[in-house]
Length: 139
Image (cartoon, rainbow, N blue to C red; front, side):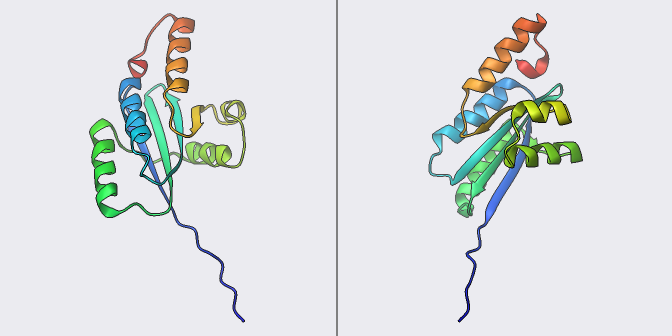
């Protein structure tokens, strides 16, 4: 008797966004599209801008994927992660806290889980208040 392991298939996209406004637009899109098989998102801030990693549980229908990619490309562009970023994203997947990621890799993970505006907006406000400046990436 043969036993077959169930294969799981996930799709992952990593996109760069120039500022918080575009990042929030992308998050809003994901929130409103509950028919997408979205497992989780990871939001990262860097001095250059924002990254959103979107991990889907299973395949996306071709039409839905085309629509999704069109919207993501309107707000940002695909991003190829550096090795430190890959290691940091793997770390968050394996249960490291955002504080551990920041200490080990100097990468600011702002949110991980279901898409939500709150953490991005709080980070934006706290950074501006603490630094007394508003860099382009936080506008």
